[in-house]
Amino acid sequence: MQWSANDIDIRTPEEDDIETKMALDTYYKKLAKVHYYEDILDNSTKLKEKGLSNKEIKFLEENGIDIATYAKKAHFEKIKSLYDPKVNLYRGEKKAIIFEV
Image (spheres, rainbow, N blue to C red):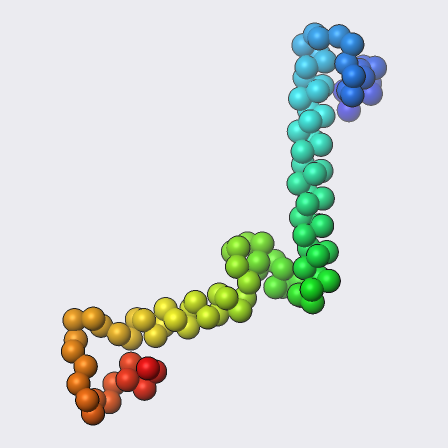
């Protein structure tokens, strides 16, 4: 930590030289990283209070949607893939899309 070794006051710097600017830049990058991880942990704590497991929280953070919504969307896509809009459906047919609808 160059600011403590070089006696640089990070919160209220008195000098405006290159060494101080570099120390400030390093300090603010580290501070931003700390705030980033704080936000992740706060969000994780709130989700845990709602009853989500670690696996569900990780899936939510990586994909942006919860597992239930993802499963519904995947199911809908499977049903949608069964249907071919170019094929006409007639009464009495026995295809997979007929049984799903």
